Image (tube, rainbow, N blue to C red; front, side, top):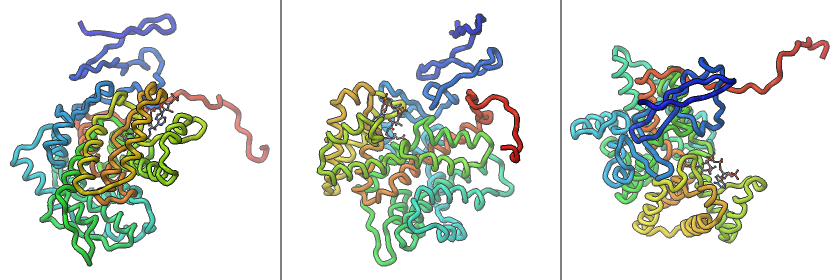
Length: 428
Ligand code: CMC
């Protein structure tokens, strides 16, 4: 017999069904709670709230498990290409060779961005943060690419998906080039996805960029590790905005803005700035561990530490830590902040404050060190996260629309003034 949960309130009993996911996580279905009882729930930060049913990504924070569509992240990072993973997330299965060829060719052919969009870059201050520019330009895509005459809804969505995947790297590298005052490079469609991105980032009219396979491989792994993470802040934002039937560009632009925050994707930039600050201050990690332990008075947190759902270890961080050692040694880079990062991790992992709160390095702790070794500047770190997360946002937006989810509209507990009489301005 199916389980149910009993709730007694104001002397009356109510019954609510429970449900179980395919990986056995359990939930109370309280869809009828307010109708039945007149009560709502209060769950700040949605720490216990399942906002949707989803078949895309499974994670178990206690066991440190992350799977996309049933495939272990460790397997995908070791064996797949980023575009294969994008296809898997968006369409639910790994592509056949034929499906992959069609998908990859379509992306290759849509990398060029409307020339009028290029002019928008001139309106931004040169020193604008690339994340602000990226979010604005993706929103602007809705003005340039929303009409696809004579296509079915499904065909339109597929073309929007291709356009987003194809053009985001172009826009991202343009935002960076603009911040340097360098000319913006056009995509070269004879290049694969990651080499094309690297070429747009680093080549100059006066100097070609030599694509290093070590760099391509490292970026492939990083993008896969960031590709989805179920109902995190930016993904929930994408789904919430999309639930009003806003178009895919506006929804993803909102997700990019959410990702920018330092508690979310923006943490990767904060980590490197923090490690640099520790180095400049003589490299004494214990001083910073102490400051973080007194976060309430110092206001200082160890960026790259802690996670809402991972309470044992972050499987992405484990892969990235190993990759950081490999990549730096293959590229012959000796980055002193890597030693500081390892020292900080060691000190924190042996400290009661961090142990008791289950605070471990997260995906952002070592990713910046790899980006840096690849030559990617600090203000582009969160943009790299956005390029990686794009397939996840798309998959979640598409699933939300296909499941015909109702508009997202949380409740609140009102704590303001009760009804009072209006006093005209002349009498105040
Ligand atoms: N340094 C020091 N103390 C911390 C940290 C930290 N990085 N993270 C959490 N705490 C403490 C916090 O002060 C609180 O202590 P107390 O119980 O004494 O009040 C306790 O740990 C629980 O913290 P919380 O803020 O209630 O936990 P949360 O689940 O709401 O927050 C988090 C998760 C990721 C926002 C938080 O750990 C954090 O701010 N970390 C630093 C920012 C960061 O690295 N973010 C990237 C997350 S991974 C990439 C992504 O997917 O976005």
